[in-house]
Length: 360
Image 1 (cartoon, rainbow, N blue to C red):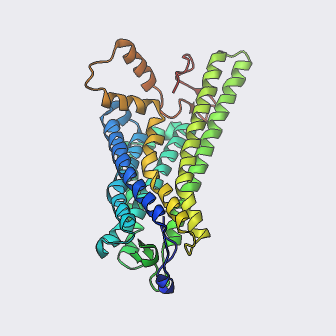
Image 2: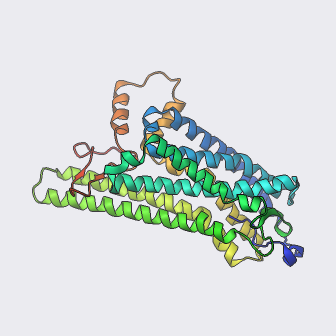
Image 3: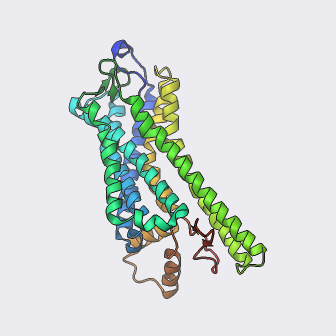
């Protein structure tokens, strides 16, 4: 995700004036993101890693991978960004100027592809539950995560070594980014495979999940309406879980769009950086993705909240019997949705059909 729309050549001589208020805002925001992002992602990694039940879920591995990516972004890129806006210039030398965009774009791609891996994981669980355990064996999960990281940073190797474009300083925007070399740049390729296709994959997967869950709810309602053994309260539970899943889907997708789409639009609509302040604001929104992800993927989920509670309350003694029972009841459920749709039989099963759902 570029932070400036001008790339060398004759345009390099053109001076772009960034209002001091905008650069101060960016510097302060980056410092806040460093603190919040480091703490949030580190706490999430520790909490999930220490929770034995969550470690058994394939999705947890992808969430931890996502948090590691965001942690690296907050610890490597954000301090360099803060320095850039504090000085209103790049003062850290050519080597770091090449390293910065390598990690910036690489981490952004890793985060997006981890999100895709999570959505695909959720889709297979809902739509093809019968093959889930075969697809998400431990060694396959590690292979998937390894491929996500290798592909994301592998895309940045050509410009790093100067084979396809180059990494360097763009003087008008005092940003280190991907520049053209001999009239060629991989930016369009990175946009396609690092943003557009992941976004389409996320939309398609969550739309398919919603369709399957809605279809399951209708089958349960129809069965109950014909005098089946399913109680009316079970239909209400199903509807509640349907809405809970829908809210989580919307949160994930809207945060994804809110973080990255404005920067894409600004870079296309104002390629010559005629309104610098808009570019600064769009960049800040993009950086925020490394901070909000732990909240979106962790805090909004009941089992993750339990993991946080255990991490922070481990020194308060053992929980009461009732608390233990409630925790076991909650943790026995699948942590995004409790529905299992069996396409071959058309039946829908749910571990909560006989128990009212507790509030998230």
